[in-house]
Length: 573
Image 1: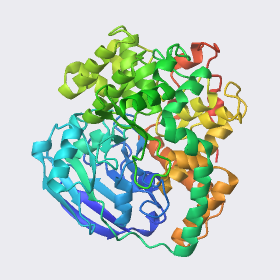
Image 2 (image 1 turned 30 degrees about the horizontal axis):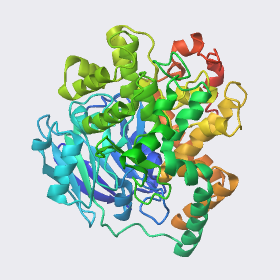
Image 3 (image 1 turned 120 degrees about the vertical axis):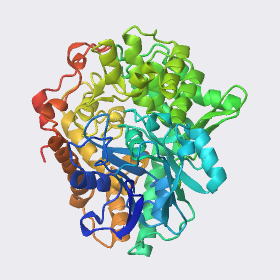
Image 4 (image 1 turned 135 degrees about the horizontal axis):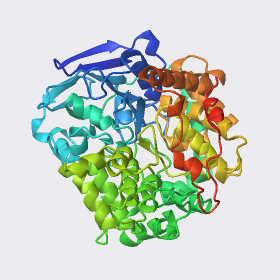
């Protein structure tokens, strides 16, 4: 277990054993608790006092599948609060195999300097100058890196948006095919990376020095049980490999919770044109892949490869949230345009969700028309060009709303909402409002509870409690490096107990229900809320935009009906 600390002021790299206070932490747990302890809450997010932390999960690099999720933590330039942004791909597995618990980037290089951080197969790290890569887009950049340093490297990098320190800038992560199509997208952490003068982190995937497993035999047996549970889940075994997360378009739209036209309606009349089923048919017809493994050690294969009419690669993976943000939210019904927008955002290095919401706000304000795919592509391209409007768009939906003096901005704490309308999914609104991260699609997603009939999305009863449980649980699973889809399958009593056996065998310490997910998740959330409080956040920041309370959403014609007092009790623990 080791930390690699990189000081960008003097380019000094130090390696240290993980301090006792951070042991048994990984992923989001480590990034959030460390940021809360080591970063001044009122610092400039783009200044030298902020830290950027890359942390694989506790179980990343082990035999347990679906644990190649990387947490990236910092103070967010978008929300002004604490942020953990989560990426798939290969980097978490590569770091775990090297026994690296975290890479911590501190300080700030001079504005004109750019560097690559190389971590070799022995876990040794060094900085090399990379001024020639400044402003380069991610697909070209990763291609050149693989040419220079070998294809067997994981790459985490910024595009032009990160170099320009725009508030929705992402950190792109390479998938198993070496393409920068996975992203730590939310919260603008690519801007923090850009502010440090760090263009890319390159990690050799051939490492063989993972932290030891305390009880290898017990670990193997526990892993078998977890794998069986994950594979027996209908969504993971049948739906995800065929349609990916895009399978949610039809059911969420049917529930009247698919926000479209800047959240003015909850049902998209032309939803079938952008559904997961339509996308799968189109990909098959063109010779692409509907089932694809994008992340190391994945057994779900929910990714896809979208190709054009010539059968040439466009993007991977075209996900539900992006189909919504670039499709329903903007009124665009052409999957080819949506795929090109996805590829463009990955290449420039911006969050597809906040960018789609920002486009919708601009369209709602009359700057362009809903459904105009050509205009959407041109607007996103302006981010890379660095035009005045491109910088506004790249700073997110709130910046666009301010520019046009337009009040209908679907964002919480400055971060664009995800693909579920709170007026038709009340508990999702609780998560959007109260998550320390801003509106978030994985922090406590209730869509499964609604689709399985466990909870009525339009009734207040049970929404706070379910959001609370899921926010706690997902924070804990993020600490482990576990994929969201696999985590959902493990929320049952049997699944939870099996996962605790994995953790116990790995660490040599007995985990009970009070330890995981509850104890671990509560500890993480308390640290995040403490940071935000000290940064100046109050209960007024745990609210949805006014229009959700005032404008009834068709087709149910309901508003968000959970009171401020109830929201304030979400984290009474």
